[in-house]
Image (cartoon, rainbow, N blue to C red; front, side, top):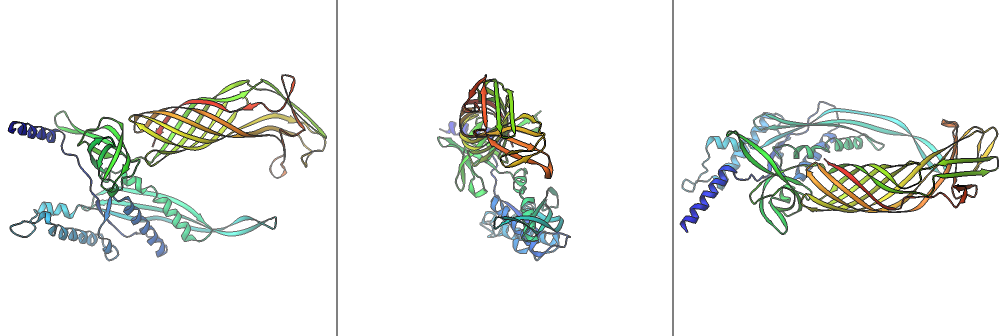
Length: 515
């Protein structure tokens, strides 16, 4: 029994010696200066920036704002910092953790006391640029079925903000800076508030990306519910946050090097713990975890095939009405499928939700384009994951049919043309596209995806567009392809309408870049 105990102690000693004990973050104490600016702006503007900043820092939960009651009483930075240091010393002397049981007083070495007194960060916010202008703009309103133009005043404000982050010893760690402009037709204060909101919108991610403020934690256990982590909602950890598995090794016998050996994604959080899924790597109990901030966006490049059914290569489009007879013989690319190229923007919602916006082309004759909006849910299985989702889709085409040389006055759908007329065929169709995607994640920033599904398209609407002139002299008219004045011939035979359909199975490959 004693031998086993000694072996246990020896193993524990080796583990501590070579791997150390994982660091677990606690709330960082910060002291925030009142907002400073050399610009002459209303007091309400200062207070708004101050309230938004404090509110953002509090919402993040990884910070504890200290000395807040002294912010407006100390105009000198030295006095302000000294007051915070004195308060921290007083708190340390009352802490039972440092109390000597025999003497009945706190016993803290001077070096440790100084370290405790300086264990906070200072945030110095300022408005480094400000401009406000007002001008009149024209606004159209509909009154009694008439368009009325009136002039209204519009306010534009440009706000440049800065937040310097300094240690208690006076060392500058980092500076956040941004500038935004905003307009309002209510008042200048509203424009200013919108500009400030935009300017400090990136501060949260900026702070999460600083090594001093990244959350560090450890693996508590690995079970059926996933990987359990110490810390949760108490430090602002949310579903969708990611953590690197980090190991420290010795290089050349003297240099310490930290390596990321895996990646976890938070699935659910409690107040003081979290559960995560393994994306890459093989975590072990006690492993060091370090926050790996992401904005939650994805930029995807797609190549694939999509249905584009054209039954014939030779289609003759005829339009005939009083004063005009137009014939266009088109050599389309007879096809069942077309090559597809697209760009997709995805946003991550919490642990597994996704929304996406897709645009792209179906490379064929006629050329078609698509616009899609949808969402999905991602199921994680380590480096592999599956996305089930659906998109609302619009596929449109534009085809130039030629010019009608006009030498008289022609009326098309109540529009009179006395010049040459350009004629286009255009339109589109709406659809729904259920889809399934399989992903393989190589690292935090890159995935490879295979995607497929089936598109159901309905409500096609196509028409001929007639136009002449430009600017204020431009005239235009449209005629639906179902109009009796429009007819089709396919391979010399009369056809019921335009034979163009996008329904059917589709597939593709995507390169997914996460940021």
